[in-house]
Length: 399
Image 1 (tube, rainbow, N blue to C red):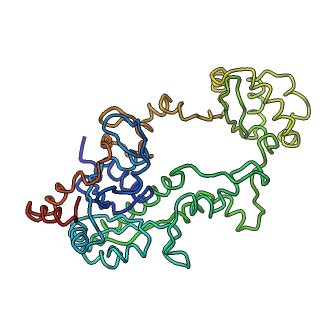
Image 2: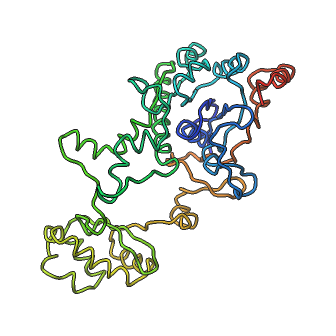
Image 3: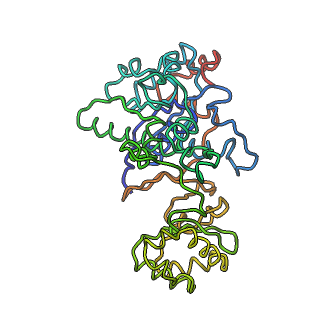
């Protein structure tokens, strides 16, 4: 295998929680050296959701196991002038600097674009924020639950009717897609650097990514349409695009296009005479009688286990999906065969970054580092002597 695409690239991950660090994780998968800057002691606050059983060598929050993999940890006190001086030396030798600290924190720590860009004309400064970098809320911190999920209309729409309570998002649900936007911005800037020799200032935000994720509904509203939450499942507008419970308790989700030939194949699969009633003979009839059709399909799907329905529907080429439970995922043969799940070096499984390049073998994931595990190694590589490193440690600048 040839050199990995980001081999020799040095990335400074001066961020916390998920979206910024996860963008650096994707770069590490393709060979980049990623140095994670975190406070001495407890480190990135994202580490602190402790879980007792993560397997050998894996400690702390399982989310950090995913987003901290492959990195070197430098525990550095950026509140001190000496710590800021260390960071500035590292940045001067780096290709990419990633941060998602709010602008007031960046100014306080001396890590704004204006302060770091002069250190290297080839530096790509990647900024991630909650609400963007202009406007009345530019300085406001945001999490994916608040800025990506709630603010952008997703929380309002993803529920079973307007009378239902808005649903809460899952951990990292907006952060991980947003990380891919940040990764895309960085890679675009790297391409620009190849053409011009100059670095640049790129970024993304939770707000922008949430609007993009909800783009179909947002655009409809911008075009003057009234957009409302989907109705409860039993009152769905299309019986062939809702989910049904099988005999064993598993749910499957149908996604059948309105072509008449697909309806005929679907009817054959189920073999129920009620589906041949004239009121269901056309797409318009099935929509007009969707509630009744859903009730009939509920009874039919409840007669067999999911595995039986899977075999029947797959054989007919019907598009559907299992509504997976968390315990299903680790044994999902498609996720394993397609390498959507991959092993750490110790055999524990993790989630792969969601892209591949033909001819490029990704780095096999290595466990997330302990806080400050690589402090001395990183500083030696940056040109610090052992005496200088001892002094920095004695002064509490590194941990």
